[in-house]
Image (tube, rainbow, N blue to C red):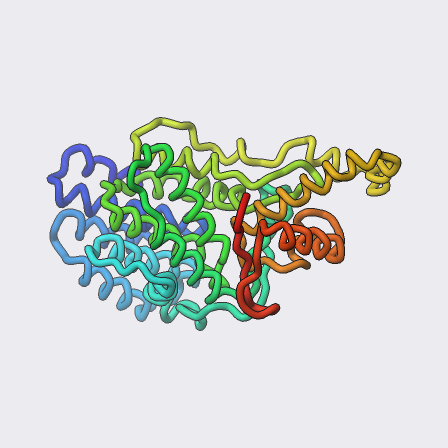
Length: 359
């Protein structure tokens, strides 16, 4: 990566663009701790210097993995090399189609021949322990709701108008949209690299001048910021926040110099201390007055609205896990909110989604 930086300083505009694309393609492999081969890096330099085309790089890398030396490489190195070439191809491409199955098209292009499920949505549920969550997991979309949720998110974004928004407001909205797309996690593997390529294409689609080095240099920060943008644990006082992702996009789109360090995202000691407390401690407030009970009810409803706003296809069971009360308790609150004309449920009982009528 450092060897390529000299081209950005000294190279011609088209050479600088090739370098930036390659740095991004290589840097994104770090999300999954993948490292490219020396053969790949040497071949990329030939492309940067204009000696061979991007298509020739792809052919040479594919041929390399039919040779004795290539066959001796680890599968993860082969994945790093091949996927990096394909990322460079996509971000160099000028066309883009904003539609729900864009992610499937990107994933298929990146991982065809590497994963059997390339471009295919998962039909099972997943969890992934995260260091910044001290081993806990983000609540990803359930396998049977992926298509519906993607369609909802893309339809909502299509209807959104950026007219009159300041740059910070645009960054905040873009951060939430990209975080929502990533949280769906449609595929068994390769979701963050797919989301990063989609984000680059989407930003260019909106007309932003995107220099991709920030993805190359901060790929793990990018992933961890997506994790924190989609993690809520009300029991321990943790709410999802896009503030870390916004810092990333403010650097990218506004030229700011925010420090991007994953260690700032690790859930704090208060979470650890609360986690060790006896769960029966919550019963200490059992003798509270009816007024405080009503206040708790209002707070619960606000938490439900927050979840519906971010995850309209959420279920009673999922709400119960996030908010920390029983499914029956969630049902009572939902019924009250429907009667108060605050929310409505659209579609069948299983498979429909929630809409907010009044805040």
